[in-house]
Image (tube, rainbow over all chains, first blue to last red; front, top):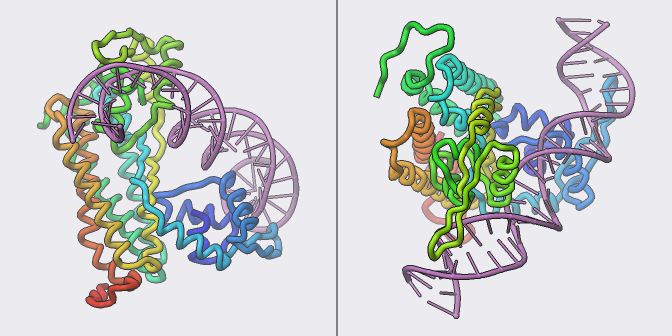
Length: 181
Length: 181
DNA sequence: TATCACATGTAAAGGGTTACATGATTGC
DNA sequence: GCAATCATGTAACCCTTTACATGTGATA
């Protein structure tokens, strides 16, 4: 993943981490410093990356990595590899399977949070500098956008269904929604 | 996850694995025998699960697990816990970021595979016995269905865009698609 | 004054998969 | 005969996160 991100421009470990958090890769990959720094060191040892230290004023020194010819070859080899199926880890979906055992207010709050975080993701994607993207990056960014929109759309259209099936809230027991098929 | 699946009925480790592969939980969780069996043993030791051995004819014995009262409590505690953000690991999205470096035929094949596997997932979900689902399970199943449909929809609407940007195939260099904005 | 952003790195601990070990039966 | 399904379990290995270690400068 680090190798891939460096194909879009030289960067330090710290900048790669920011890319994982904020860039278009945000919605399908992630890594912590504990795996980024060792990976960068290892690939430099293997000759896939070159490293130069950039001194900065009023900031700690920066180690900027860039792809070598071997690095580009390794990237091309990686993207030629067969791809495995997408894997999703969703606490939300897991908890929703037991919505019947949860108070209505919790189910509603869970859905609200999901919608809000998808809206947040959409905002971040739309703010990003899309005109500079390659066709591939643009495709991936719009893909992330489309999935988030579909996510919000599904939740808004179906929430009434599951909220109706949930447990009455312990305290507030008025205003029972009609059951919906 | 095992605790959760057992809430829908007693099962053996082998059956839980099948549930991960075929049930509605298929699209957001997974586990191998190497983690299922130890988890089952551990939870039995902790008193969350009860285990009975069912002898079978012409088949190895089965160890069927069921939730104890403590198990139900642990499940309720688990679903009351704050949920973390969904995490997606997508080789496909990663490779697509570098579509410009790939031959058109590979990009097309990658997209075909994605569409086909989503169609396959839809078929499996629709075949399943939906009428017996709880409101929660039904919601999650329809959620998986909606996401897969959105996935296919995006790919079909946008594939021409990225396939146009990819590299000419090494051998076949005729029939160049028009660039699309 | 405290927290955040910048900046790199290591080690312990945790979680998971892969591979192995074993064995019967059914279908191609 | 060979592969797949049924069925359970262990251990080595791999990868990752979490937490720690260190230090400056800007902002609230």
